Image (cartoon, rainbow, N blue to C red):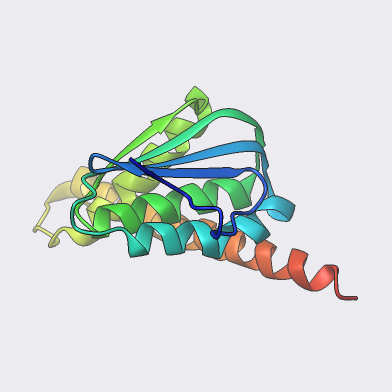
Amino acid sequence: MRQASKNDVLPEGLSVSDADGVLALTFSGDLNSATVTHLWEPVLARVRAAGAEVRLVRLDLATVGYIDGAGLALLVKLRAEAEAKKAQVEILGLSESHMHLLSLAGDAEREAAQKPQERRGLKGLAGVGMGDVMASMVDVVSFVGEFCCLWASSWGSL
């Protein structure tokens, strides 16, 4: 079992372990624009650096008190990065409403990735339209999360 070494600099509110093909990221505190600013790059770097032996990325949010749009954007991005590495994603401790939002974002990503099939009738057209709307929503959520991180980090330097 490999846990973050003493030389690793982890942001406050994050602990990491990597064992038996499972990369576990445990968050605590709040996931909001102020905290996500410090978490965004280190967390994404951990997932991107995970080797091919990592089959599961576990996001443990059991001790997270509050999640705003920036926090959701981080979770959407983490899930996309893990899935791009062909790893399964397990999310623990997330409220039902937040899980529903992540599910919608995932559905939109999968819809956009699929080759559009010819659909007929109003129902088919509405389905294509909603897929496009949901795919756009994923882009907006990611943009808002990144913008909040940049804004919060520049706010401290003013």
